[in-house]
Length: 183
Length: 327
Image 1 (cartoon, each protein chain N blue to C red):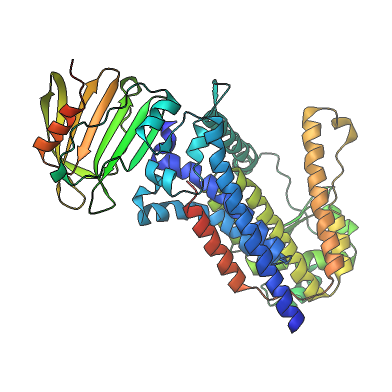
Image 2: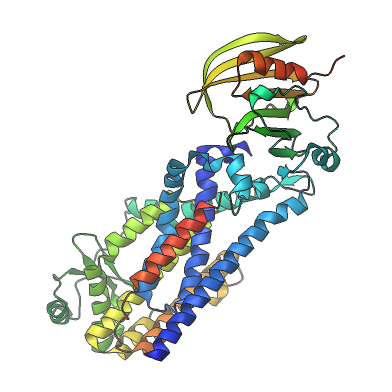
C-alpha cells in the first residue's frame, strides 16, 4: 500500500514537473521573436523608450488633457512597432477604473491598417470635421457600457491619427487639436 | 499575413497549435502515468484529434477578445503571430513557410487518403470475382462467433497470391481474405486471424474509423492530425490483438498469423523513386507488425488495466487550460 502511494506521488510529481517545463518552454518560444525581430510589436513603459528604441521621431500624444476628464497621466499602456510598418498605440487610463478612457492610434498612412480598439463601440453617426486645417472624420458612437463615445481621425504627415475616448465631442476635438503641432 | 487575423485564419493556426500542444501533453501523460495500454492510449489520442476542432469556437465564445492584440500581448502564454511576422533574412516571411507546411499536409491528405477512395469508388471493368473457398472455414467462424456473441459475417475470398485480410462494411460486415491466406495459414493461425477480425466487428472499428476519419478530414491541413489519425488506427489494431489473445488464449498463433503479413518490396524497384517510397512504406508496415508481434508475446493473455478516469480528466483540463493561452 505504502509503495503504491509513493509510486502514485512520483507519477503526479513527474507529470506536474513536465507540464511546468512545457509552460516554461512555451514562454521561451514566445519571447524568442522579440530577440530576433527587435522592432516588432511590443509593450513599452514610456514614450521616450519608444522613441529611443524604435527611432520613431514623432510620437503624437495630447498636449491637452483637462483634469475634469478624469484621465491619468502618464499613459497606462503603450504598444509600438516599427516593422512591418510604424504603429504606436497609447492608452490613458481612467482614474476611477482600470479601463482606458482615451486611446490614441498612430499608424503609418501607407499601411492602410486600422488597429483594433480596446474601447469597443457601436457607430451612430459619421461626419466630416476640420481639426485645425486638416480634414478629419468624427464618429459619434455608443460604448459597450452604453455611455457615449467619440472618435476623431485625420491624416497628419505620414501617419493616420485616431483618437477614441469616452468623452464629449467637444473634449475629443480639443484633445485632437492639441496633438497637432503649431506650424 | 492579415488572413491569420481573420476568424478562419485564427481557427487554422490555433487548431494546429492546439493539437500540437495536446499531443505534447498526452505524451507527457503517457510517460508520467506510465500508460502503455493501447485502449487507454486510444482514448487520450482522441483528445488530440477532437479537441482542436471544437475548442477554438468555444474559447472565442467565452472571450471574444481572445484573438485581439491586447490578449496576445498581455495574457497569452504563446502568441504564434509573433513568429509568423518574422522575415528570414528580411525576405522570406515565416507565414509563407507555415502556409507551405499546411498546404503540403493538405496535398499528402489528398494524394494518400482521398485519391485512393475516389479510385476505389470508380467502376473497374476487370475486377476479379470472389472465389468459392476451397477450404471450409465456416465451422471455425461459427464457433468463434458463438464464443464472442457476434453475428456471423459473410466471408469473401479474393484470387490474390499475397496475404490480404480485412473486414468491410459498417452494418453488414464481410471478412475479406485472399486465396494465399487460405492456403498458407494453419488452423491456429486462421482462428487467430478470424477472431481478430471478429473483434474489429464487435468493437465497431469500421464505424469508429469512419468517424475518426471525418474528424481528420475537418483538419486536412493539420500535420499533427495526420500523424495522430494513423496512430489511432494502429492503436485499434493493438487493442483488437489484445482482446483476441484474451479470447483465444493462443498468443503464438495470432503472432505467427500477423508475421505472415510482412511485406517484401521487389529489390529491382528500390533504386527508383517510387521504389524508395515503396521500401519506406513497407519498412514502416513491417515495423508496426513487428511491434504488434512483440506486444502479443510480451503481454500474453494478460487483462487490460483499469482506465484511470481521474488522470484522463486532469490531462484534458490541462490541455484546455494551456490551449486557452495559446493563440
